[in-house]
Amino acid sequence: MDKEQKAFERLRLGAEMSKQYYDALLIICYSGGKDSDVLVQLAINSGIDFEVLHNHTTADAPETVQHIRDTFKRLELQGINCTVEYPVYKGKRTSMWELIPQKLMPPTRLMRYCCSILKEKGGQNRAIATGVRWAESRARSKRGIYEDINRNNDKKIILNNDNDDKRLLFERCEKQAKTVVNPIIDWQETDIWDYIKDNDTPCNPLYCELSRIGCIGCPLSSKKNRYAEFRAYPRYEQMYIHAFERMLDVRQQRGRTDNMTWQSGYDVFRWWMEEDFTQYEFTDKDFEEN
Ligand code: SF4
Image (cartoon, rainbow, N blue to C red):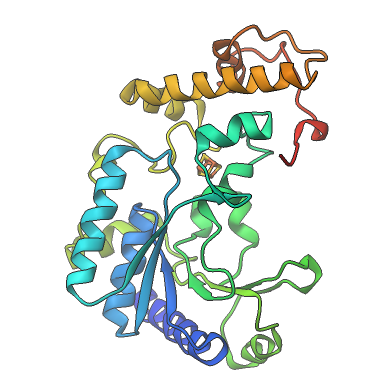
């Protein structure tokens, strides 16, 4: 069976489960990147009923935000319901720039608090489909085609194949958990570009300039990419520096300055960009739920 047919099967099963367990349409998570464009195209081509959800990260490039708007307009004209979810933290609208002083530290590879608040909040108690691919990151290699995301990690179920035997496991999942289907998890980069080309799928124009589309300055990206992003979007660099300044003010007010020699937001920015590790070593203690 070719990859497209396999993805159709996974989507159809996801849509069926969504209807059966949640009495709702499958949600296609849309980030504005090429993988999610392919996922939406596959959902259309498979003939399932679905809706689309985008989590507004507040740190995406303006071109990405525009591409999302254009895509949603096009999908809505086809009768597909599209929603943009804005980030909320502790009952209030938030943003990357608000979270940094609130959390008392910049987001880092190890402390990715921003992802769980800005990107992964939507789709609670629903079945969702994502464009996650194994080829994208080693950290994702443990993910299965179907996942049952339960607050209790012991109850989390990950399935690496979608045959009928495993299907039974699904039926034992708690109804309240978020169920995730990853239909293109085994697709390679070339599969993605081929599908975009074959289907004439409109794609984020930023792929002509940047190799990776996502939050500007994301700490998961390489240093080279991050500098390229800040060269293209200097205003974002300023917004991070300003947020780091406010973070230092809050740390000062709370007496959280032990072992810290940063004098300015720019000092923090250099540390964050892996230029200077001598100034402060964050520990778990710094991760404060504020
Ligand atoms: S900056 Fe990176 S880690 Fe943070 S929300 Fe964006 S993608 Fe996730």
